Length: 170
Picture 1 (tube, rainbow, N blue to C red):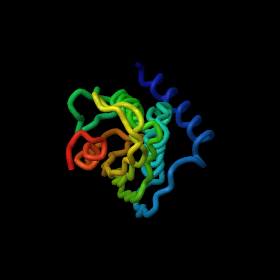
Picture 2: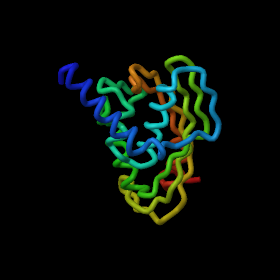
Picture 3: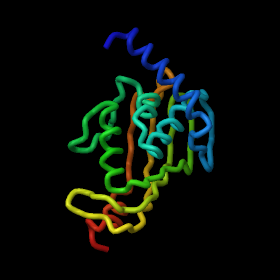
Picture 4: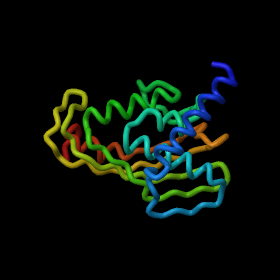
C-alpha cells in the first residue's frame, strides 16, 4: 500500500468514526490528560473497538504499521492481531463490554486501564460456556503517532479470566 493510499484510508476511516461513533466513544471514569487530544481520542477509539468488536474502529485507532510489543503466541502482528483476538474472544463472550476505568495521557503516550465484563455463553477452545460472569482487567500502554496507535504494550489478568472460564481450577 502506498503512503498516499494509507493517508486516504486513514482520513476516510477517521472521518467515518468521527461522524458515526464520536458520541459512542467510551468515556473514562478517571482521566489525567497532559498531552494532545488526539492521543486520548485514539485510546478511546481503541476501547470502543474492544467494547463493540467493530473492525472499522480498530482500523481507525491503529496505525497501518501498528506493532504489538507484547504479542501473544499465535496472534498475527499488526492490525489483524487485535481483530482476530476480538473475534475469538467474542465467540466465547458474545456480550463482551469494555469500559475505561483510567486514562492517563502524557505527550504521545496513553496508559489505559480497561475493565472487561460479560458472560461466557459461547465457546473457548474445548470449553462450552454456561453463562457464568466474566470480569477482569487489562492495562495497555500506547504510543500514538499521527493520531493513531503505533505501538502497544499490554497486560491482561489472564489468571482471573482463565479461572472464570473454567480452564484453571479455583
